[in-house]
Image (cartoon, rainbow, N blue to C red):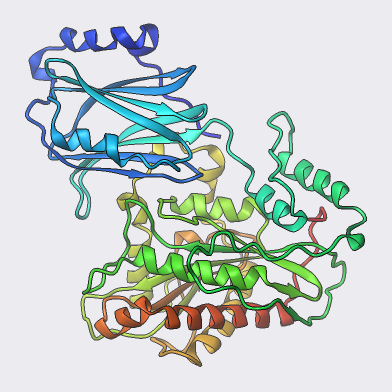
Length: 462
């Protein structure tokens, strides 16, 4: 749950009175002459983001009106310009959170944005300093007031019913949700197995026929969904690495993750259905610690983060698989890459002041020896499968302090599918045939891992 906006003087006035604050400010306090560089909107079910990039920091005042829900943002020292007007036309009809944006010159030197929202929200407004190719950014994040429990979607896929909503009043909404659905499913043996969910596949080829992997049942095992968390790297404001032909890492890895999701959802392990949970299923940014927290929230059995490597030397080539390291990195290259990937939050843009306690805890190094050992086993079979269809940068699993691999109770690996900075490998990454081959290799590796390491029973049946 996200915290609401910090109270401002605007909360004691109506929206129509808000502009009068600018008259109380001295001219020295207002950043005049700022130019808008770009405006962007990133819609997603998790939240919708509006970004206003400028050559100077922008001074703002904002207020949120709950009924009907709308966010008003006053930009001080600014005259209405074509760049700001572009926001009006950038709102997509299927944006889950934003219905429309209105912009106008409220008074001289004061531009007002009004974001009409589709549902109750907990907005966040914050500024980001220049980083990488970005100048100053004003960020408006529109989070739904009541976010859906991520496990609800997976349960709904299994039962074929509508996604149940979590009850905010329950002390353990996740556990209660599982129990309610388990009761609704009984007796499960009398119900047909639903067809794999392919709604997210879009224009990709159809999913392969369902397969069953025969594995031994670990003592204490139970009939339940086996959940694999897929983590397409970067997204939204953070494009990741960019190839010589302009290919964005965030786009390639999302396509591979979608293909792998289809394969996971069409597979059973010893009769137990598998489901893929994606930390992002569209083009939006997810902070590193939030990716870990999402995987833990759905009690994932595995976590696979998918990336595309890059280096200053275009001759660098080959795929790599990484696990977490409790100590030093296994090589200087692994350390360099971990440092680079761990800076994603700076580029993507995180409002660190409001991250909740659980997300902050996920940033800590909570690695365990058992988790790392299992991660190395998973990484080993993935290296073998990827090496059978593509070149490897290193023929072994490497280790370094990747922030996204720090779930203490989930075997976690990061796969660098190829060097997007290499022209030949960039061309392969753009190829649908190569993307399919990658998804097949990753699927084979996951099945091989579970064949020797069956998932343990959870405390509650899913």
